[in-house]
Image (cartoon, rainbow, N blue to C red; front, side, top):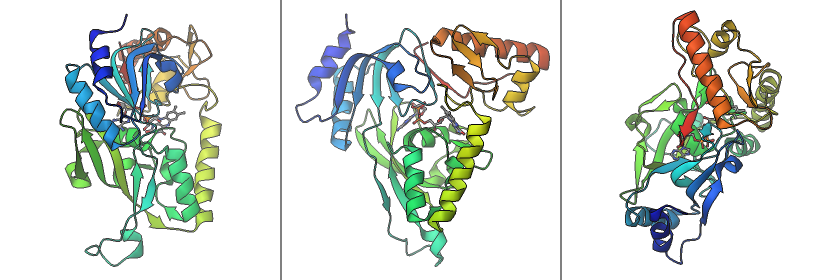
Length: 319
Ligand SMILES: Cc1cc2nc3c(=O)[nH]c(=O)nc-3n(C[C@H](O)[C@H](O)[C@H](O)COP(=O)(O)OP(=O)(O)OC[C@H]3O[C@@H](n4cnc5c(N)ncnc54)[C@H](O)[C@@H]3O)c2cc1C
């Protein structure tokens, strides 16, 4: 039986809503872990008018719990799923365009190149287009399987750079208010894998980036090199969420997991990867509970054996 607000929500959407509406959709289909039970309701808006419809229906349905989903590459969803509304942002806006040069910026070609990307654009596609057109500077994002929206929310990156270093501004849809606001980089507080400014019901709809003019072959070469490095050092062929823990200041999370003797440790269908111990991989039939048990085990061992805490980077849904 569906939650009482679901019918109210669905009947509040007008016939002009062009997105998708799914009840009891299993979220395992939408996460890189391939794990997760059903959501009460999942909507996939395709444009800003659809988002406005979702906003109205959200209010009409009495503000049910909401989760914004990008490519699902940093999420662990409970085996029981999520009692609420998931707004999946993968088909919303996949555009990428070169913006006009701003006249009040210094007259330097590289400093003035600005790209605007839709929130749904996968980072891999974004970088491929950058390579084709000869826009450099974002190669450090190579191999991150998220969307633009997810990367902005997470301040995604590596030790070579983070989103914040190249971000100029974002547009955010405020779900309860049903309006889009623009935020310049100076209005955004971003830390290691954190965007402190975005609130729970904020939906990133676009982002603008500073890029440099570069030879397409040079951009391509850097991307290929970074992807090759990842293939060697990360278990990219098995479902995962990437790094499970944030790096504590004492040492890299993978080192802490190694020192706790957990590399390769397996519970049910989940395993601390042999290749990169800060990745928990789904060996094929992992439950969210298996992954969670490994996370708790590592936290307990790290606290008792090494004396500090491991904080998850992965986001939890439905627990
Ligand atoms: C193999 C692998 C390698 C990885 N390597 C890296 C790495 O090197 N560096 C790194 O930083 N991460 C890495 N990750 C993690 C992940 O790809 C990033 O965190 C990515 O930015 C998540 O984007 P997403 O679209 O998948 O977001 P999701 O996983 O769907 O969501 C992540 C968070 O962002 C929020 N969110 C998503 N879209 C929006 C939106 N449009 N508006 C508002 N909030 C939104 C969600 O609510 C959630 O809280 C890796 C993951 C995998 C599987």
